Length: 134
Image: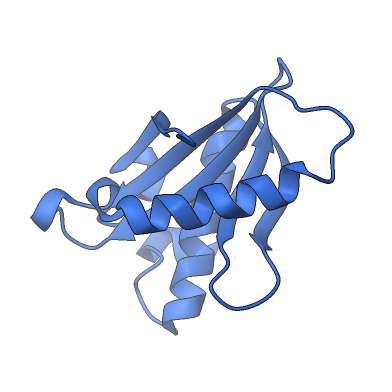
């Protein structure tokens, strides 16, 4: 956990920093009582989608989580970076995931936005039901 002392962007590759921010987001959501079902769920083929975290609330709701991190809060910050195209790809991947289930549970799409380093929960904004599948 040494990276938490310095922050996820303190070095390494972009992929490693992204994974570190996802770790931070996952820990934040688990502290709030959600349980991890899948991480980095991808649809097959080109042009598909990816879901950073698929979680389950204690009431059974499936939560598809997009983790976004930005070093600075300019241009709307991390949350504003989940535009319509990204939303469509997440919804596409969620539908792909859901067809495997025998019954359709309640679902929602959340964004966990991390502006700055997100150390110790500072700079983390959890947007529940940030967008819908419609």
